[in-house]
Amino acid sequence: MKYDLLELQDAMRKVLKPNRYVHSLGVQYTCASLAMCHGYDVVKAQVAGILHDAAKGYSDDELLRRCKKHEISISNVEREQPYLLHGKLGAYYAKSKYGVEDEEILQAIIFHTTGKPEMTELEKILFLSDYMEPSRKMIPGLEEIRKLAFTNLDLAIYTTLHNTLNYLKSKAQTIDNTTSEAYEYYKGVINNKR
Ligand code: FE
Ligand code: FE
Image: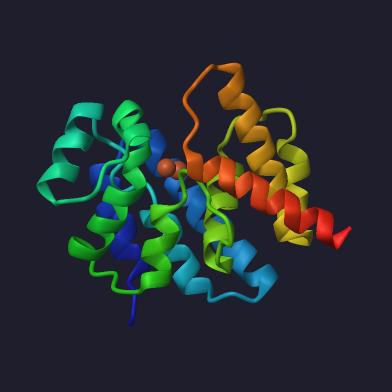
């Protein structure tokens, strides 16, 4: 399929708040860089990047309402923390509003919020780009992850999940099971490679 990246940027500029749009552009270009580095399709990576937060502009109630309307399943953790749903709803809009049929892209959008075990290359690229794009404010460990993403994808994923879980624990936030499972999985991957 042929994608018009300018058209997708234009669409996101209309639905997202300015700072969220700048974030999405940053994710798009970081996805492109990581795709170049790791030999992945540069266009597909950018489509995932620019569209990944397509459903980010909604309030919790609105996210729940829209997911119900489109018969998107809602887990207990998602009911408690509806912002987690912007991945699933975003993928739904990527397909229905922006014409993306590619399952690899849609899956990457679904899992960009939580990560998951056995991520595909695109899932890894998007998950990391979302975390490290240039407009993200500097936090401890970010510099290291930005380097690792270009040298060791799995170690970068592991480190990101590790830091994310620590952050969520420090804020006493409910943690999505998928994120904990992803962490355990990548811990295993890293230890087996050592
Ligand atoms: Fe997001
Ligand atoms: Fe994002």
